Image 1 (cartoon, rainbow, N blue to C red):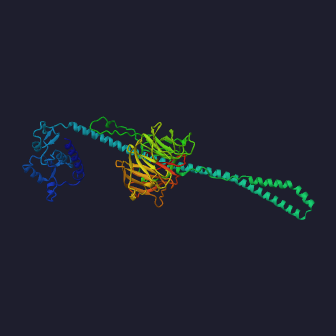
Image 2: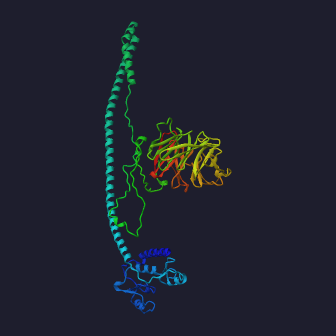
Image 3: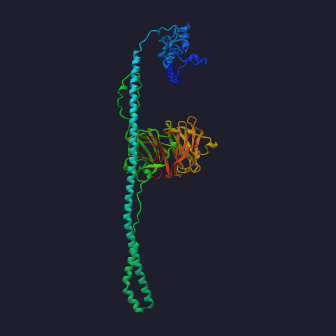
Length: 629
């Protein structure tokens, strides 16, 4: 029966498709279908219900004369249908799919099938529950249902049309409001400009007066100096010894006063006018916001509590935008929405590089400058590894401090599996494990390692740890790196690779490792990043999937933190090139520098819910948050 129902649905869909081409009410004359096979076009005078065909007068007569078609029901004149879709649909639904020349006549309840007489004979002779479908069944309930549905769709169409008109009016009003906002902002900026110009005029007048007074004082002192110099020169040339002694003594105080006046004028500080606290243009990202809101459902009661209808259980919650706390930031807050709107284009084509906020992550107990070497985004906030103060810090999604935990050393990498954070250190041969929840950072668990771990990442339920054997984590020198997959303190596998294969030439440069997907990892290799397929069971790197390297004006130096978005784009921090790169893992030609001139970026996280990148830097007390537009 299920198969028959699917066939019936397909039949109805086919009928609807043919409706436009064949069965749609015709505006012109209708021609006899049998005659058209002889390329003759005769206007119809009748319609055969059984054959679902238009017939001319001659074909109607032949239809009645033919013994086979004599019993067919013919409609004539005003009864001739303009749209034969119902007739063709009835014929298709009534015909056996296995024996197209026979009508369905029986129902087999044992097999839940509608069958013809041949199907009954061939396959259903032994079935116990076979019923003849010849008995007339009342269709009143179905007719009433269709009438009710028709009434509902008429009401719904009227509602939607009214809503469309209302929406157009609302959009026009919003457009006018936007224009009004634009005018108000322009008027406000013009008013601020005039205020600045007025202040400038007043300060200029005061400054000009001060400059004039100082210049006049200089002229007066210069005149006194010249007069005294001439007096002394004349005295020394023409005066007697007694005159020289007397005059010099008489003018001694005058010369002292002159020296004091000059010294006072030299020390007098002149104030210059400067334009300060200039507001950054990129801080004002919008003068308002638009959102899609669900209107209250008016007059929808007639659509509910009826049978034979589909219900949509999707929740559509509209939440108010949340603002970043002003007390812990250095620039203007930016509203974010918990309800993610579908972006107009992919992240690989959207503009970035515009900083929207700097978030201060230095806490009251920090004694040193923060250096953020790890950032992860649990669904309830932001988890940071602070190298400068040897701490783990947990902030809410509004950047409020939730908890912080002191660490036994300086963390150089951190990974998070949704429940636990794992940390490795610059000078310790150990890995620590910390439980994380939305209210606190749990106590410290640890296991020792033979070598010094410099990077780690979660791989299924285990850890991949990258060890340095010679150079430290901060070096860009080639090292004899060592890879392990661990389940807690136990080693599940040691990862090997073919060092003679040129594909692996740059593994020795690796200073960080990140999981790319369930079967591959990405190494940060100084001037490049490379993705390798990994066989965890056999413990080896199998092949190189792709790589991205420094080239032309897209300089990458000292590659560090790596992050991935849902579209497969990779983000790489260049600590020494002071930038962040974006490259596609599926199209190597699609790559770019998304952020330039950022000082020593170490780690990056992609916050797609709010269309932004969150970046931690060396020797900075701030998280750098950049937008995608």
